[in-house]
Image (cartoon, rainbow, N blue to C red):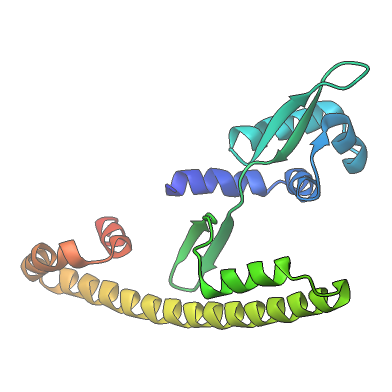
Length: 197
C-alpha cells in the first residue's frame, strides 16, 4: 500500500465514531437506524461515516428485502487487516498485513481436529483454550523476535545513512561513486532519505 493511501486510512481510522462503527460491525451486520441508535448519533452523520468507510473498502453494504416495509441496507466488515505503526527516534513507518487463507500447517490441522472433535463440550472447550494459549504464546515470541530484529535493522540503516551523509559532506565525488556502486543495493528508505538530503 502506498504511503499516501496509508495516510488516508490512518485519517479514516482516526475518527472515533468510525472506529465505534467498525467495532459494532465486528459483532454482526447493522443497518443505519440501528447504528444511529447504538452510537447516539444522527442517521445523516452515520450515513456519511458509512460512505467514507465503504469508499475506503473497509465495509460493504447489502440490501435485503424484509416481509413488510422497504428493503434495508445492512453493513458488514468487508475485509480484515492488521495495521502496524512503527515510531522510534530514528524512523516513522506503517505496515499493513492482510490475512490470507491459512496454509495447511500442522497448527491448522490441529485446530481443525480440535474443532471437529466429538469430545464432551467442556472437554472440547478446555482443549481449545489450551491450544489457543499455546498459539498466543508462540505469537508473542515471534512478535518479540520481530521487534528485536526491527531495532537492529533500524540501527544499521541509521548508521549507513549517517555515514553516507558524512561522506557526502566531506567528499562529494566519493559519495557519488559509492552511490553508483552501492545505490541499487541500498534499502529504499535510505535512498529516499538521501535524495531529500
